[in-house]
Amino acid sequence: MTSGIKYEREFKDRAVRLYAERRAEHQEESKAAALRHVAKIVGMPEDTLRTWTRRAEVDAGERPGVTSDMAADLRRANEILRTASAFFAASESHRCS
Image (cartoon, rainbow, N blue to C red; front, side, top):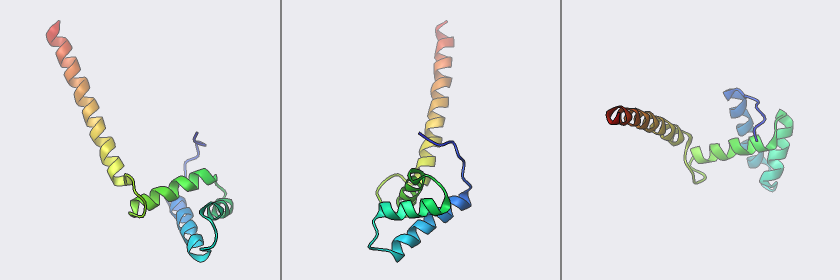
């Protein structure tokens, strides 16, 4: 469930950067502890920061998954397919009447 809060891009980037810096400076610390620490500092939910850091790792090629750019391309392709499907369905129903 989302909190409904919209964060500025600069805030997201700063929070992810702080997490990466924390991990680099405190390598003995677990990822969960680093997330808790940074989330508390910036005043945001840990789950949100976790999602952002995972997305950043995928985008950087450090974690497997669909990058943000690929996901955007897929969303656009799906929208085109939905629009085309609706067009052809409407066209077909007019032919049959």
